[in-house]
Structures are given as structure tokens and as C-alpha cells.
Length: 454
Image 1 (cartoon, rainbow, N blue to C red):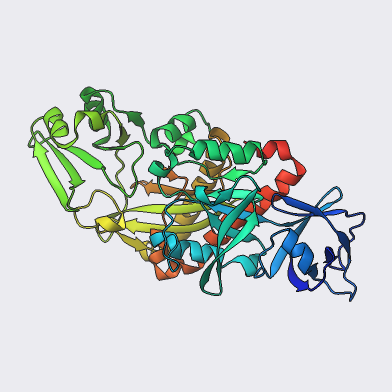
Image 2 (image 1 turned 90 degrees about the vertical axis):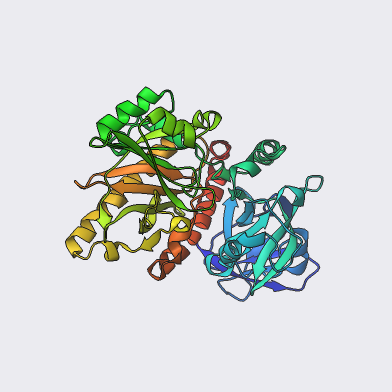
């Protein structure tokens, strides 16, 4: 199993790398870091120590940041590869040194602070930080509670953390991504945001995934909504590319009063309930026609409740350093009073599974159901979607007879469940695993470079 080593420096005008004595590496002629490579003298540590020691001259030649204290070693023929350099690509940079990535700086600082404990070398960068002429990038690092920049080589792998779909559509993004992948052979993981309808359409033909899928269609007609309401009792109409529960409408029909009801959140954040004798008029009143054509209609599920509040479940999965899917976090979310979703900004509340299921057997059964569903669907999404996917956030519902249903899969899952005190250890685990997958992809790109250019 690959392991990281303590990294030390010594002053020398010669380009020298001393290797841990436990490693049997001979005939090494070159050393590389990211996209940079140079000839160097390489031998076992003269003092018989199990550490990596690099001369000041070699460190400078490779643009190795002076604050890196642990590192991995990979061999590719006659080359030792130091790293891995994991470039975290994003946008929204500011001129404030305390918050260089705005409000998301806190999240990135937690991610970057794992360097010494994990051995990987993560940094944050954006489009404007790349020096194409010299194959270098100005990376943002977070060291000892302080933001620092350092010029480093282009990374071994890139972890996509763009904040929204809008930033993905900016001119130059696809060109930049393609150039880094094709010219430099850099694997790029977690590209793009999932389209709700596309995920369901891809999974409909997957034998393992289909059992978890509620009926879901692009909007076509009002008779389609009527049919689904008659079959399921209620339906949800929501944006194909929405997030945070915005734009979600729940439609129901009361047979006694012969009226249609819609529950939704208005522009001011208030929870609303509106009724009408006509479904078509009600929908047209609340959802403009040009927006309706970009919506999906989804089967309503009669959810289990906690203290009379409907609950759903967020499950995070990550690929680990061996490229294997792991369930990294599970939590429940209870809907706020009168809310159509369980999102926190709609009054929702994060709950641990133990808070929802006080009976231990029920808790264990539910945890296993959610875990199984998440792992099956992670593999199914990986089979049916393009690109390297290293993390997924699932929104699941469980109906009153105990069946698990997939509501949404998110390629860049939010982190609201980690506000719950019981979720702190899992918050750390998700961060560690998101970088562990970068370690795995680095190894794969060395062994099978053609397979990591997807």
C-alpha cells in the first residue's frame, strides 16, 4: 500500500533527492512535481532514515513550496514523481487576503489544511492564475491558519469545485478544461453539475438502479400532471437544474372539495399554500410558461415522519484512495412547518438517524437500506455518466412501507447536514476522501495514462 513520508530540506547547490531507506529504488534519473521534471541525483538516505530529503536547489527547480512537510513518492520507469499536486479549480476569487475565495474561503481552508496529515499537496486556483507559457500556476494554500500563494507546476489531477452552473457556462471554461486534459494529460474529476432529468433518464435503463427511481418526466402537458396526480396522490414540479429546493412546487388534489392545492416557497422566503378549481389555471398562475418547459414532474412519495414532520435523507458517497465507493455521511432532514422541502433555509432541521429512529433495530435497518441504495446508485451513475466522479450527494425518501426512493443526485453536494454536532467526524471524512480520490487518480494516470483522459 502506498504511504506518505515526512519531507525535509537541506542546503545544497546540487540537485539531490534522498529516499527513505525502506524503499528499494534504483536507476532513478529524473524527479518530477506536477508538470515539471528535471534530472537529479537520487539515492537512499545517507543517515539510514526513513524520510524524504530534498536539496534546496532541487526544491527550487521544481517550485516545491517550502511549507510542504509530507509527501508521496510514485515511480514511473526512471522517474520519481513527488506529490500529488491536487489543483482545486474554482471561481469567485476576491482581492481580500483573509477571504480570497469569498464566503467559500472557510470550506476551502478546511480542505487545504489536510496537507500535513494526508501527504497530498492541495491548492486552489482559477482560470486567471495559469501561466500557460511556462506551465505554472499561482496556487492558493492554507498553512498554519494563514492564506499563502506560491507558484507551482500544473497539478497531477484537478478537482472541480466550481460554485454553480453559471460559472460553468462562462466562455473559456470548456477550452481550459480540454487544454489541461489533452495537452498536459491531467485527469479532471467531478466535472459538471448533474441535470435532474438526465440522471433519471440514464438510470432508467440500469437494472440495479431502477428500483429506486420514482416516475420522473419532463413537463409535456397538463393531462400528464393529472394522470400522475391520480396515480400517486400528489406530484412535485421542480427545475431540471435547481438547487437548495428553490422553485419546487407540490401539487395535490382534494376529492371532497374538488380543488387543487399547491405548496411552495415564495420570493420572500415565505411558505405558501394556494388553491384553485382548475389545475391548469393554478399551474399557469404560479409557473410562467417559459419556465414550465424547463421543469420536471416527479411522482410524490408519502414520506415517513418525525414528530409529524416529513423527513428525507442526505447520503454522501466518496471514492477512496483505492477507487472504491464509500458511504461517508448519512443524516436526516425534517421539513419546516408548512414547507414543501426539508432545506434549512426553508425552515428544515438536520437530524441524526438516532434522533429519528429511537428503536435501535429500526435505526440499523434504515441505515443499511440507505447505505445499500447509495452504493448501488453511485456505481450506476458512474457507469452511465461521463467523466471521473469522485463524490455524490443523494437525497432519498423512505415511504410509509419502508421503500427507499431517489429524489436527486448532486455532483457537488451542499454541506448543510454538517451543521449538526453529531456529523462533525463525517464532515472531516468527506473532506479527506475527496482528496484521497485525487491520490488514486494520480496513480492511475501513471499506470494507465490513456484511461485517465476522459
